[in-house]
Length: 417
Ligand code: ATP
Ligand code: MG
Image (cartoon, rainbow, N blue to C red; front, side, top):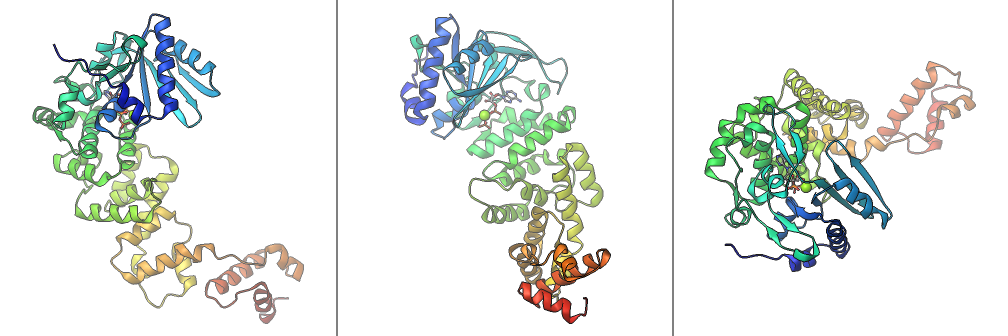
């Protein structure tokens, strides 16, 4: 028999007191109703690894929605319930906790969403993707802190292995292919040999997954600390080609992703910029294909289109003779991530300088005078106004005028009133 491991002191040390307190109370409430409550999944894995993770996932052998309602009563918080899955989400202060009813899953066909039914915890843990995610911690007071490790999670964690639970795992749900690569690269683990073999064998099963679910996986990847590692591995194994056959996960991408991070605020992954860089080598047509496959939201789709359209202007942007207003008219209207991506991709220092000038300065240049001011000066309302405003803006961009007074003088000088 294996020893009992108690993680109560790790919980105490690694999680904020408010969450620890919440779990203890939750365990007491569940116990008072004869139900068992567990902390499960990623947070247990990360507790053992000493990695920060405050996303609590709780599973109850009982009724998650009822329990969630009782627990939120004492807090100023929000509750959302999902009766179809008998799960609930609690949010208060800066915390968010997911509560689920222990369940098992069966897959009617590959890639479909599973049908679920209430089950004991062992089955709930067995339906999970990898052994390192199957561990749970008992929260009832009588066994508080006790680790439940039914499928060898702790051993795999120690050996740094990503291992599926059964041979059909990737067939049931091929999103696990992407998830596996994500954990492997995030944690610097390795896919256990049999898992790796099955992963490669089942790559075609990615065709059974909806574009929406693939997009979600891609978003998760791009929110990782080093997405390029996952993309490179995906390229190497032939997984990236399933997203689009022309995508590259090479050294260029690694280099550009690094630069993209340096430009962005810490702790805020530049997801849009990453995506533009990833798809940078696609043709117009390939790009459209990817957009509709992933059903990208409008704004993101536009960013990708902007990037392609800007690519054809890079050569013009490399002309050292350009005036600031020339630069402005080449770049304005394009989404910033598309512009930044093109700057990162360009080999021309001049083009990059011009783009920097636009991003740091030109795009913010504003006129002092408004259309109403012009009317007041006596200019006839109509297309003329627009024309003059554009002229003034151009003069501002090129530094020919620098003040309201200057703008007025320019109009007078042209004899516009
Ligand atoms: P992360 O740190 O990336 O959030 P996590 O382990 O918390 O890791 P989630 O995506 O939040 O991962 O999912 C919570 C748990 O649900 C996982 O630990 C895993 O046990 C299970 N799970 C999620 N997606 C799947 C899937 N496609 N197949 C099987 N189990 C899954
Ligand atoms: Mg999670």
